[in-house]
Image 1: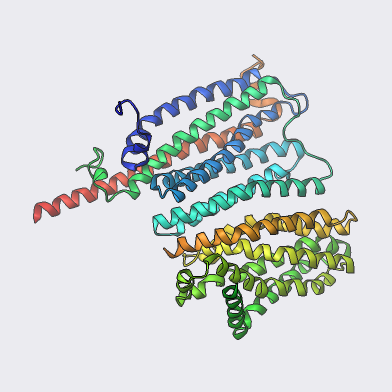
Image 2 (image 1 turned 45 degrees about the vertical axis):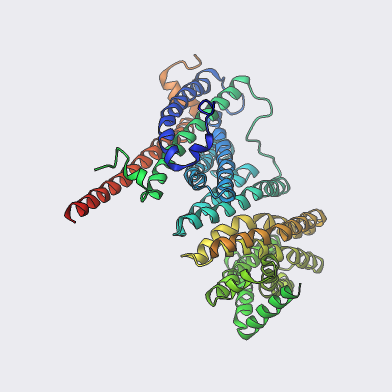
Length: 248
Length: 221
Length: 62
């Protein structure tokens, strides 16, 4: 009877998770490719030309998904860090550690593509619109998390301190966002709308598919990174020493 | 409660013996605020426009200067460990340290702000709003800063890392604090901003000490 | 098909620099990131292999 029920908690040990992650990674890469092809095809060959922004608007098919992912990854990172802190689970903290660089990259790409969108549309490389400003602050939060973990030598202390910081950041993200929206509406006379109120269905689909593509990519990359982190942090254990790739 | 009062009194006493700490933050505030007109130009209209932002950023940075010392000195001589194992809840003692930090690095800024505001040609009512905003905002800086100070206790590159961690979290305080003065100047009334600032302060006063205490325990493990 | 020719596609109605500049940096990023992780993985494996070999030698020499 108990043979048929999978004990999921088995996989909360680095030893058991390492091979599982290894098997999952190719699956997620395939999904990434699938959604990516579908999304890009939608975005470049199906979605029509925009009435106001011409072909330049197509940047949203990568800008918006990257922004979404930067926020999703932050929440996932904070959640894993919280689990690691409250249950004292090393692997959960390693997962948070693995997610951070990808999240930071998404935030950076969101800012870059946002600038490349802003320049032709509104004439400046940087626009202090509420969303882009919040994205910048999110980028700083990621950098802070990574910097804090990098500067603490003891890995468990780094895990826990990072968790507190990630949670404080997560609580602050809505506050920061609304304060920036407030700041922006009072200071900007002309409201700059980065997304259109009515969007062609094909445009929505393009963004959704690309978002799924980036999501699968993020999972694939995070799993790959966590495997490297596991090896680094569990180097002294027997099971690592017995691994095929390492055994002399 | 008594223990908290004792902590506050003790921290203030230690600062009084080295008055340079209070004066450093204060002078920093004054000097930085004076740098902006020098860098931008003396036209009163422009200065009045940038005053709230400049003064707030100055106050923010000045308050941040004293953050590292919140726990570092006690950590170095073992007092912090004594605080952890004392019968008084650590949260109260941490709250006491935050209050002491504000009295030393925050309140003086509130008191000198009107003088600096006059340098920027702000009128009396604007100065009043500025003081009120800083009165609400500087404790917020101490509360949030305590979390950062606890997280980076004894860590390499502590000071700069602390700034990187804490400055993004300061942004709502900056937006609403400076915004309050600007709203007042433009005739819209500062009530909205000040209420929001007070709300954030109330939230932080409740949650920040807990977060700082958790961070402190992690740092001392 | 909404593009009349390949050159139309690359020009993106005059916005070519911005569209391809955006997608380009993302492509670079999404290729570089997994590569860097693979390098990190190889680095740690190399280190651990060396350690395992060193330990083996120690045991043999005892």
